[in-house]
Amino acid sequence: MAAVHLEGLTACRRCQRLVDYIAALPPSRGRTRADYHNGPVPGFGDIQARVAIVGLAPGAHGANRTGRPFTGDGAGDFMYPLLHAAGFSNQPTATDATDSLMLHDLYIANAVRCVPPANKPLPAEFTACRPWLQQELAALPRLQVIIALGRGSFDSCLRHFQATGQIERIADYAFAHGAHYRLPSGLHLVACYHTSRYNVQTRRMTATMFNELLAQVKGLVSTET
Ligand code: SF4
Image 1 (spheres, rainbow, N blue to C red):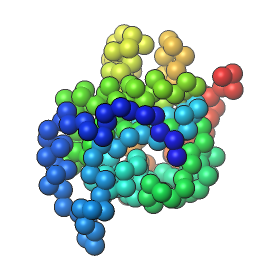
Image 2 (tube, rainbow, N blue to C red):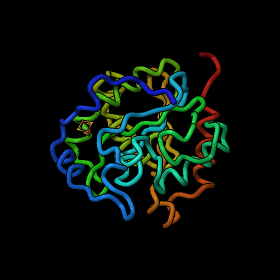
Image 3 (cartoon, protein in one colour):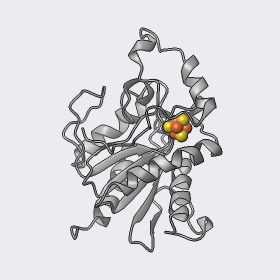
Image 4 (cartoon, protein in one colour):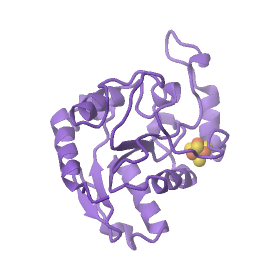
């Protein structure tokens, strides 16, 4: 599966709290630390994608273990079958980084690339990691729609847009599931509740909601590029 090359990402140590957290993170039952990626997790997908999903951060025993976003945890187990049904991938499952998953017209990355304690990056960690996100998004030449999963991701995308002169006031863009904004550049931003296991279990996020959002997104992409 393709990925935008991010020179230096593997060795990035800008966030000492996250580096320390990873160094001490115990493996899940039946696994050893050797089974874990335990480092910055790059995005992956179709470089010619018109759609990008920006999640929050790697899950401790999902992406932080497998080295691929939303792979090997509950959030991915919920999301990938629905992405496949919507035509965004070649298979409905994502188990590890060598499972032959190919994304079509879709790129997936996280706002923060190292796993944070309690799934909660600090504002400074979003800021530190945003240049990597900016590099990835800038390397997708046909990008038309960004789906921001969760408020943290949505806010980080807005700060990226502001820093790159695409928007003026962040306060003009409120987060709500399904909220859609067209930026002056023509890029679409769609807000989505996160597909975390907690949100799915509490039915804050359902398959119907995610399917409807994907249909909304497919209606936004144009075939002009
Ligand atoms: S979260 Fe991002 S900026 Fe911070 S150490 Fe990891 S890769 Fe580097």
